[in-house]
Length: 306
Image 1 (cartoon, rainbow, N blue to C red):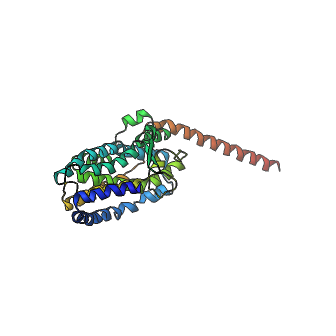
Image 2: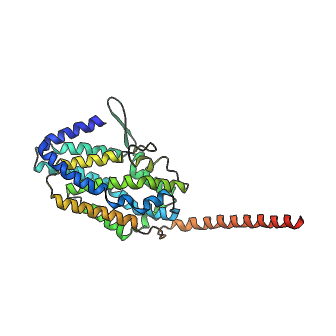
Image 3: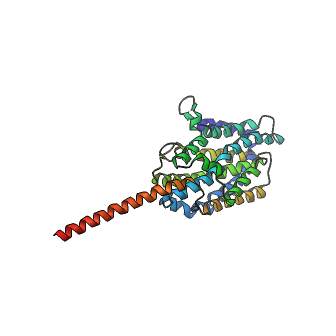
């Protein structure tokens, strides 16, 4: 797989020229640094979820808000595939193929394909392994019904984040950048979301969280770091030309929106299924109280007899 990627990058460098490629890479180092060093990397919710402080209700709401972005992620990838035609405004015909090759590695992962390491590299897959299907199965495991999903209204912050993504569909360089930032968000938050969700008794060893995170994490089969790197390299091809200062500012605005997303209040009960779960939890607590009360009474009787 490394060799496959290297071959694609080699062709992209040739398509734009080594001098221009190096110039673009210098700018990209600034852009990538602004993403990697953003304060969202130290967001308090990361340590809170790492300590498994969030309740089922809060995690349900969090995942439903997150779902609004999950559902348009592959749409954005496919739009990037289409918009890659813009590189041919300034490069020779066919240059878009290299970007599309790397983007395809990402979409194959999203749609349920996975590769088996060997010579040559073979892909296998099933739509049941697609990330969107796995996410919906996670929702079911979290006792979120189809009706909940249909009636849920994302918060204004989530809506604004989604609209920012949608507005970039026609802006190829910005779309590539937003996709790369989204991969960064996945790498930061998926591990702790998995931890807190699993602590609530919800299965996370397989499924959505098993394919999200970084490649070095031995607990999953994720490769979001590879996908992010591919997106940065595609942007280094030139993306048909772009204003560097404008792209940098829009990128910072987008990651600021992500910070607002994770800072919102997830405690508000916006999911009807919680009303079905709550009485069960109350009954459990009441039963425990009765058992404790009975044990105390028995102990008092024993003391009285003695």
